[in-house]
Image 1 (tube, rainbow, N blue to C red):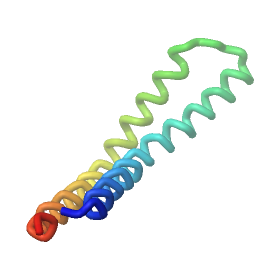
Image 2 (tube, rainbow, N blue to C red; image 1 turned 45 degrees about the vertical axis):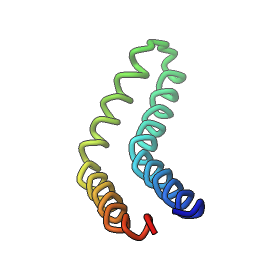
Image 3 (cartoon, rainbow, N blue to C red; image 1 turned 180 degrees about the vertical axis):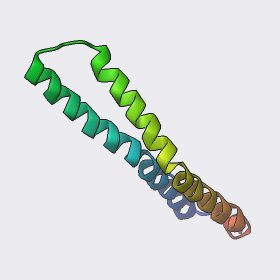
Length: 89
């Protein structure tokens, strides 16, 4: 296995990880900004008001994107295992 192969596999794994985290992070960002604007407008500074909507929205985003996430993980793992003999050479 050459160093270029190892770097390529690591790069693909990092790209996949970032791609899979993007829906939850995006939803959390949008909800966080919305709650912050709401808090600034109403001057309510309750800490649970920031965390509970983010957690619930991230859980909902995870439920909605779970089939897509599993498909991406299974595809990456399958390609990694199928190419394993080529990596050994």
